Length: 349
Image (cartoon, rainbow, N blue to C red; front, side):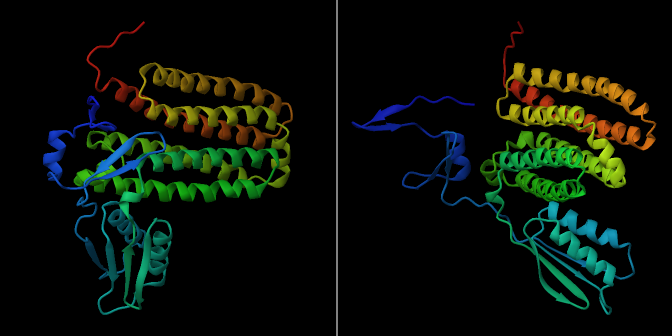
């Protein structure tokens, strides 16, 4: 970060000069106007008026000449979306699109933010992206993903407390939204890699693009663990869920602590403080040890009831929480590394 002195200009105007390298890079000259945006945290952003956020309109044509595995078609759509393609046309020259392939295409479109089917014929489907990449900052996407992850744990907790399949099913629905945000995050990062203006707008230093990809993957994988925990509980019969409800007070403590440490892991990103990041890393490791200790105590109680399915359910639930906590460690490590990134001297007391 560069520091510049504020100077007085006239009787009531304060002035600060613009960095010469930036002025040259964006082609700013005397007489040009700039846009100034004030953020909620009190900081400001300055944009040149002629900045270009989007590149050329990227199009991809996919020709299906044989009967492929339907998943390959949907994976192609996901890849095109992440890579920043604006329009994808899928066609079968001289034939008709298979019903299952058509369904896979529509499912993929529903799972990707900003995509719509703009035309559909028996032999072709065209998908268009209507995303404005400048509207999605990386910090905002990470915050939305982490908040959704905490919501998943909250509903998982309610599912156990109330022995409710409805709450457990809600966990799976929220996980779908996290996936949508994850794919959008990857798209933003890859576009920002080749578009310096966009990387500035969405708040990503290009040197941090790889780290940010690890961040969103960590949250997405933690969400997968919580989703799997809900899926595991959904296969239990109502009678087993009712028994599990009796152990809710102790399971509640574990889930509340998991939500808390996830919150700490994400919030430390904005601080870039070595000590705080290190404290969070220790908190993550301590909680993992606590979970192992707690599960042993709960299993001893359940074994006396001679209900093997409940023992297994509690063991798997705890393992899912353990794994979701472990997924947070790369986030705290990245925060620690970023705190060190620009230092010339470190004093450890």
